[in-house]
Length: 233
Image (tube, rainbow, N blue to C red):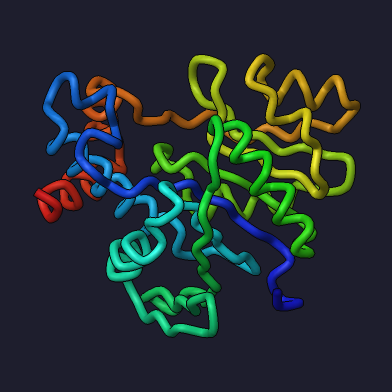
């Protein structure tokens, strides 16, 4: 880890195999279209990451044997220049944005909350001073809010980006709190019970269903999503 990269952003990604992704949309539009939409959402999310400061991005992929397939899919989607550096990649976005490092690692087995807890614990063991995770189906969460989250996250604080229906799209801390990854309680309640100062970002929507997809198409980011969907179709 570079001294200029004290922050790590964790993003979970699934190999976009029809029948394995966007399963709640598949019941309306079929497995293939659900996969196309997942790829389009990921493409927009990658655009939203341009502008990150002092941050390394760790894509945690599933299944665990999909590392080459995931990197083969993701890296060409990045707008700019990518240079391999050992086991990671230096990415320089277009429009004179700051370069940052990207790496890929498997999620491992188990329920999602256990996988996220394990990868967050490993990130702190790797020496990062601040670790944030975002949900890949919140394409509204771009570098503006991620940079703000890292800036606001200090010792004894927990930064959360809330989403509708008691969900969240971002979680950031300066140390590992395993209790935050409980499937029974929202992290906001857990953070307060731990005595952490809670920093709350603006609420942003996530895309789970066809209705969420249609609503997003009407948002300001809808043009990007339409273009990405057309390219992936």
